[in-house]
Image 1 (tube, rainbow, N blue to C red):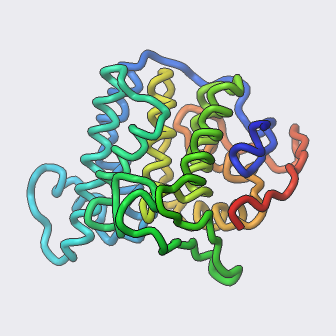
Image 2 (cartoon, rainbow, N blue to C red):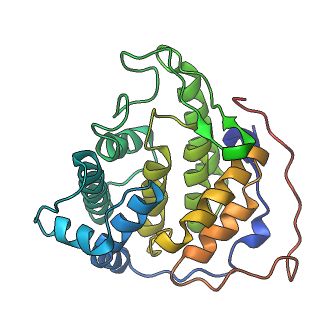
Length: 271
């Protein structure tokens, strides 16, 4: 099985930067730690969380903020805790692109928010409900069904990770691909995109590459690009968008200039 078949989507690799600055793991972790409030706020905005940046800073300093739902506050605290867990695993050299790490982070990200957390859909008590993703006027995207024991989700995950690890892709491209893999396949009842971005950043920082945060100001563009990705299974524009979000990589190239776009075939996995 080739990489695109294993992941369920394809992309044009020419949108990847020719060179990505690589530093020490310690330097990448230091930047992530220093930018933690911003990373948490950005992630919260993508989820529609109403906390402002100063309120996130206050909350992370251990001071409660009034006027918000407890669920919104817990979401911010969960994002902060999962960020710190990721940072600890990368710094200690224990981060792995595997199911154990994926489920551990999701168990923090979606704690008390998802129907169940810390395991794949179907591995807990709920074995019938299959969540879907709203695509606005384009309807809804439905992933693989929830089945007791999650045999198909486990197969897809194992095949996808094996294909990524054997692909020979540079760490930068491999990390971005895993984010989109997790977002598309929806292994959990909730928190898929958040957790998959943490895994993406784990891959990047473990290779000395600065982590990526989708800026709050780009939330609408992010959502629009994700809709296109779900509809076409072509990750080219999402890859281009994520490249543009990286703090040290050049600006997004002008469409049609200096690149050739070979649209991958349309995939129907899980539809």
